[in-house]
Length: 141
Image (cartoon, rainbow, N blue to C red; front, side):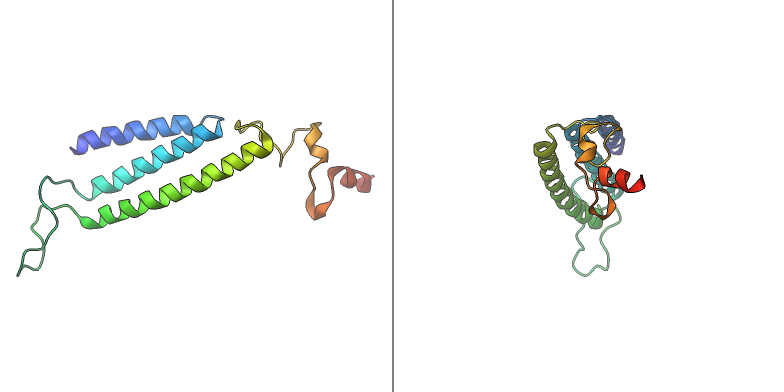
């Protein structure tokens, strides 16, 4: 079972890296979801996988039997799923806001903060101290 999960984890990481290298921000988010799921599977697999043996302590015993699944990684994965969903919802809200403001989801086209030389958006941005780049050029002259 661990070999199958190791192969699945490898496929998820490869797909997530491929998606995260895309210039499309929505694909990047899907890659982020896949890599968080791969990390959850790594934690889950590290807690040992057993069939039909819950980690219960028998009455009068000090510890569970030797070959049971560890409950701590399962609790950590459950917490990580909730945190990952919250991160995804927040990131989707940010991407939607960026799309409505900039009109694109291409990360190379989202250059409002660092416009290319000679772009029209360069004059609209305030520089440090609230001055526009035109004001900074006039002060330098």
